[in-house]
Length: 180
Length: 330
Image 1 (cartoon, rainbow over the protein chains, first blue to last red):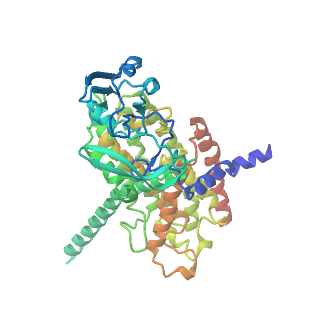
Image 2: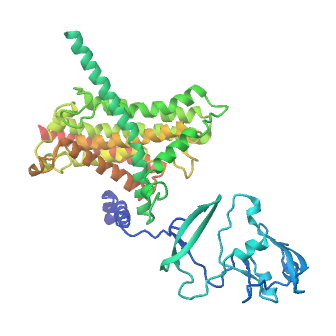
């Protein structure tokens, strides 16, 4: 009772709070400097921006069977098939309207050729609606997931590149650390 | 000859006032950055980092943004008072600096009733908050303005009692005489326990309330009042309110430095070679840091707790302090 009263009079609670914040003022910050200097590399299981896989001859794996377009619950994928010069069925048009995509991973699971896959990209922001509609060329450019266990789930040093009205954050991997 | 001299002194006074006002208007620019940096590091994050080196140009970017914002006056507001209120808030705190002596040579005016002038002028700024809250014609703004009036009137009394103790020690209302009475090292400062430590405590608590800073920022109280008295303000008018808050913070800090930390005096005689301006600025910055540090450490007082603290603790304590000081001086 008297102890509590003395605590109140001499502002013990307030002063202990203030001393805590004073000590924290000079401790190391825990911020990830995301767009400017650092970027987090996702794990292999991560379901990010899709990409189209190619085989060892640098040819598309996709045979335009349209299974992914059929199983997609949101109707993201549009495919038109064609026959190429070797007589193989290939996509003439393969677009994904990622506004509607829920990144559920059904397209990747159903694909018999392991052609459409989820990658590491997680920067979806764009200046126009068309930026989120991926054509076949865009899908070929998107990066696959990191498979090296040493690099997965780390924070890598990165650079923010502004070019042609778009922003790109490129991880260069010069410095790495685990954030947690 | 006489006319030339008169014109000259007038010119000097005008120049001094302009310089003082420019300093007050320029100070919030670096200090918003410093405050955000302190806030960040207390919460273990770096604060502004992207505009310029470690975000040092962030206040400039914010200033440009506020200048370019649309100036919204609510349709049902009292337009004249709405536009007048931010200025009424800012001007008294700038006017306080007229009476504050930086050193015995650097000052705008050496009034023989300096401290009385400071208390009187400082009390005026409350009208800005009340009028701003009332003229907005919004319930949140009105509640903020009401709280401002109750809070600042009750804490003005406590602050007055704290200052009376200091005046009794110096036997003068002149700010320079108050500083001279604390000459000769840290033991003669009013903050020492055998001088006016209790008055210092009352003054700082009342000062936090006068400047509307946490833990007494009930006039803003964004948790339950939107943004308090300045809910309806935007753009430059909002910036002027913020400027007034910073000016109040500096005014309270400068007053505390002059009244309790011996103004331009150095704490130890072997440090006398450092000019008085430096000591004054160090003491001012110490109090400004205190304001910012406590802002991000403490929660806000509830309204009834605030009134209890003001009327039941600080004012009786202030009266007792005045009585005991007078008894000991006899």
